[in-house]
Length: 250
Image 1 (cartoon, rainbow, N blue to C red):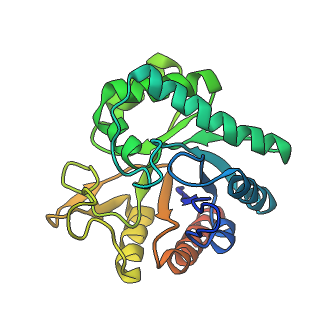
Image 2 (spheres, one colour):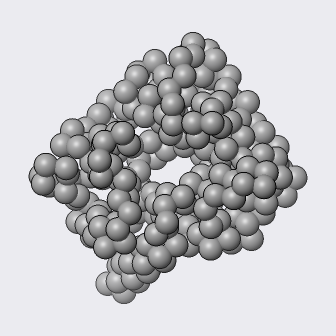
Image 3 (tube, rainbow, N blue to C red):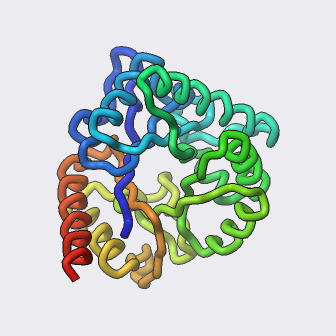
């Protein structure tokens, strides 16, 4: 059964993004920004405390050092630099977690780094290298390369978690439609819940061309900066809970 994950802790100083106090209680796993694309030490600390209070698994959400572009612009880096950047960011979050008696449970790269990881074997290997040092699983996109990704992870001694997106339009290839294209991100509650329900109930979704695609994932993602995030997360939480209850009752 898929759990629910969301991107949180993306405020910065006096600038607030998302509704973390409302979203986090609905999640199973929270992807916390680590200071490069968003966040700051105080925001990270507040977010960690919210996750601990609501018993939500903490994930590190590292990205490129790009607050102006919110980490959604690719930055050319050596593979060693990618690895050390991940170690630096996850280490910062884990240090704050230790202050509150908890710890980072997994890594989910953010934005352009996430997409670059899915399109570049060398970047994926660099991220896996950091995960191996930290002994943490990596969350990534469930797509047509899932088998090859699993083989690479196995060869490097890294665990992985596959995710699907409730609020993103997919291409026939199983990749996410680039945000530069129209309708890449769903904003309609009906549209997001429709895709979420299909993924949860049938492990399928409808692509940009109208084709049906099978998707096997461990977790379903909703974005905290989506205007409909709380409404849809509440509804998805209810679907997940109902499905779990039905399975338990069999």
